[in-house]
Length: 135
Image 1 (cartoon, rainbow, N blue to C red):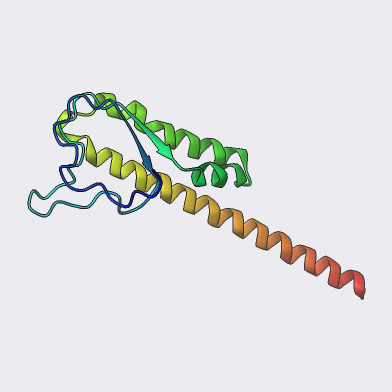
Image 2: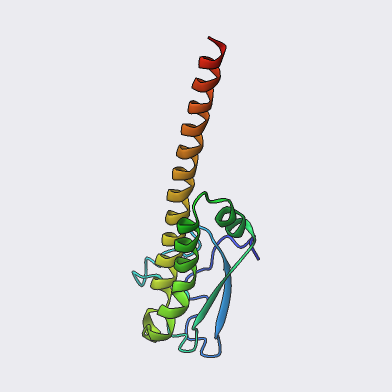
C-alpha cells in the first residue's frame, strides 16, 4: 500500500520464496540497521527479481512532465531495477533497491524543477508581452 512508511530491518531477510514486491516511491522507506551496519530488508532473498511501484502519484507526475525525453528517461529509470536485481548477489538485494528509489525520486524532483522553471519563464514572457501591448 502507498501508506507504507517503512520496511524494518531484516523484514524479509532470507525469504527465498519472495519473487516480486510492490512498494511506494518514498524516501526513508528502508531504515539503516546500525547493529549490522547495512540496509538488509531484502538481503538473501535469492528469488527477488521484480519491484513494482504502488500508488499513482509517480504516474501523474511523469505524465505532467513537459518534455517527452524527460518522461522516457524517468520511465527507463523506473524499469531499470528489474534488469539489475536478477544479477544482484543474494546478500546485496536491499542496497540497489534503496539506491533505485532515491534515484527515481531525485530524477523526478529534477525534472519537476526544470518544468516549473520553463513554466515561470513562459509566464514572465507572457506578462512582458501583455505589458508591451498595453503601451
